[in-house]
Each structure stands twice: as C-alpha cells, then as structure tokens.
Amino acid sequence: MTRTPNQMKRTFFKTLAATGAAALLLSGCGLLGDDASGDDTDGGNGGDNAVYDAMTTWDACEVLDNLQPITDYMGIEGYGSNTGTGGEPSTAKIGNAWDPEAIGCNDLIYLGSLQGFGMNGEIKVKIVPTENEEQASATYRDRVSLAESVSAQWDDAKTVEFSDPWDEGTMVSWTGDVDQPYVQVIARDGQWVFHIDLYHSEDFGLDANGEAFLPFTPEERNQWFVDTYLPDVNQTINDRIAEVQ
Image (cartoon, rainbow, N blue to C red; front, side):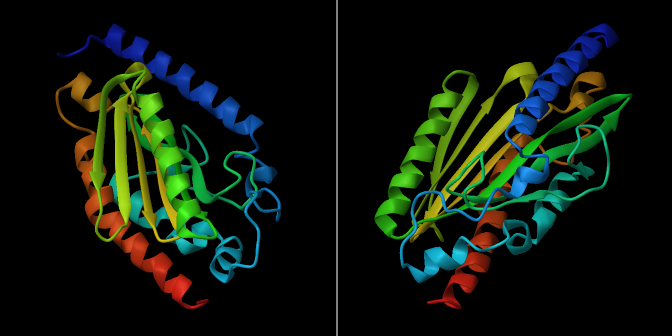
C-alpha cells in the first residue's frame, strides 16, 4: 500500500527516534567512543589453549576486511553515523563492554537517502573464541536462544537452521519497531562461534513509489549471508587458526 507524504514523515520521525535511542545506548556502552576496543583482559575463559589465546589478540576488522563484502553487497554508504557517508567500522577487543566474550567489527550504518528520508541501522559482526568445542556449543546455544527470545516479541519471527561448512548454524529474523528488518546469524565451527547482529530501516522506496531503493530485500540479504558470506568467513578464520595449531 502506498503511503501518503504525511505517513512517510511519521515513519521517518519514528525511525529517527528509534535510531537516536540506539545511538545513545551504544554511546553509553562505549561502542562509538574511545572505549570501543575495550581492554586487553579476556571475557572469562583464559587458559593455555593456543588457538583461543591467538584468536583473542586478533583485530576483527582486519580479519574481516573491514566488512567490505557486506558494504559492497548492501550498498552501505557510511559507518559511525546515522546520516553521514564514509568512515569505517570500529574494532572491539576481547573483554569489551558490549560483548566481553567476542572480538568484533561493528558500527552504526548509513544506507542512503530517498526524498530526504535517510535509511540507517547498525551492524555487529563478532567472532567468539572459546577453549574447546563444549564451550563453543554452549555459547552457540545461548546466543541462538537469546535471539529467538527477542524475535518472539515482534512480528514475522522466523528461525532457519543451516550447516555446511559449519558444525551448526541458525538464522533468526523478525520485523521490529517501525517495520525495521532484524536478523541474527549465529554459526559454530569447532571451538569458535561467528555472530552477525543487524538491523536497518525498511526500504522507503517501496512505500514512496513501489520501487525498491535498497539493492536487496531482507530475504535476499539473509540468504546471501548463509550461502556466500559465511562460507568465505569460515575459510578465512580457519586458515588463520591453522597457522597457530
């Protein structure tokens, strides 16, 4: 159904309020400031496991090519702001405030503007090292359970499981406030877990004139994560792990 200009304005200001609140929350957690990298303390695992010890020292943005494949696929125009172009995602070290068990590459994202209405959101891409497969399995289950618990509170909640090349994987998606699509993709391979947490504005083009503005639908993007992006990440990380085994 095509929305009137007044309806689009109401959607825009609701979106602006939601993203503004998210920015304040993130700022309070140190995600967007100098504390984004956290400190060098671990998230509670520790020990003498060579793979775990090595992974906790990685720069997640360096390992993940500053999220360039995601940037290219989604047409992300800017990082670190709801309205600005340019920039790069921020690195978070093990022991950071927002996810102490993970190293991460994350930030607010800007997807462009249509008729003055900006589309934006936030992405967190996390690598979670553990000391063994038992710990990794528990971490995986906990994160899937939490994602499903959140999705159950909203609309269009969907859970899809996948595997190869992963030992286990789950994609949880839903439609949140002001029709924003959310997705969490969680996968485990051996003693580490990979976790994508993403939301962004709905495609305003579909409301304005029935023509998509974003270069993907949420369903297409989610499938690209599972079929294309995650297998490449799996290979990249396992190649690095092989260097320390």
